[in-house]
Amino acid sequence: QVQLVESGGGLVPAGGSLRLSCVASISGFSLYGTRWYRQAPGKQRDLVASINRDGSVTYADSVKGRFVISKDNAKKTLYLQMSSLKPEDTGVYFCNVYRMITYWGQGTQVTVSS
Image (cartoon, rainbow, N blue to C red; front, top):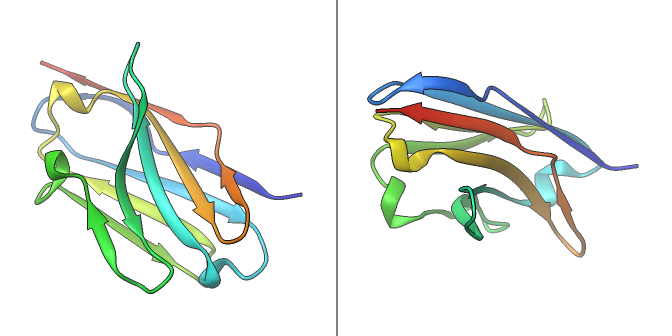
């Protein structure tokens, strides 16, 4: 059974930093595309950053220059380093891996206070 477990969320003041982790219990992790999404209260789930299957990296315009996505294939772990956090970064952050099937984690709450 595939599981994705996020951690690292919390309450941080504006301008602070957090690093999110997502550990995947999945075979062939290196072959999967990987993404971070976030969902603010009352809003849709939006793509924040991705490492695509071809290795390319993309970011939402709102986080460019502040967030860095990375992964450690040996540890089957996806990361999201978030810096210069803003109140509008508040939300539940979900990791996602995809190949032929898409899998989601349960989410971790990030709250940025002003």
